[in-house]
Length: 290
Image 1 (cartoon, rainbow, N blue to C red):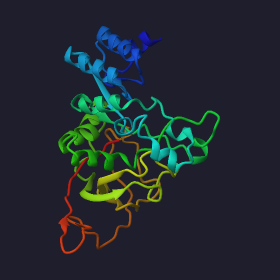
Image 2: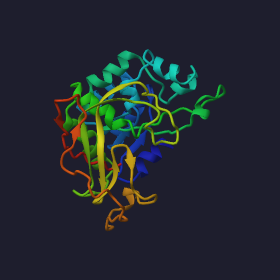
Image 3: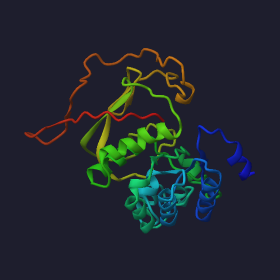
Image 4: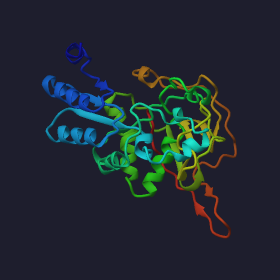
């Protein structure tokens, strides 16, 4: 069956594989045999990322993605999760499982060959994760991924240019996604300091594995097809205004008009600082296509 997938899969799209351990080596072998593009999802271990680095150096057509939880969490730093959610082990359960601190560091050490940052968003509720019998694996991550990565930029783990590549340029190229144009962008505050908590979450899961983590960097505003849809933690878009961008190829990319604050400051905004000093909010445009 795997051979048939490699032979018959559309040539303009990569074969995406959730592969762990030795399976990564097998997928890379097939990619080389059939000269096909493969995309390894959720890379979590040192041996996996080193295999991918070696394959890339030999010209194998492989790209890969890493999740924020495998970059920021490991088996030895889950105390805040357990403390916040009643010591229920289900809140630490994810696939692939959280690895060692050494595996986590290896991902950062090889950040240059990681093509994409993907959340693997799985918004299981507190009730589901609290189950003592077969709690579902997975974490929510859509709302926290960019602040986490902006914090990493501020901490010198990668550059802003690398972040844009991994969260816009590369996903668009790898998955043949349409260009949404210059009227779709986000603005971020690179200096805002805050702590991740449950109260600010918009996900139905109502919890986060990153609870208690100090952040430096936040999303200020999101504009999609010329319309402001999010400002400082508040969603102001109409329900149903989103679109599956993979279906927008060749279609006029328009959006419903939504009401936006007339006094919204578009170019700059002050980040909170103890008086008398203030710092101008940095306006950055990072396009997100997925």
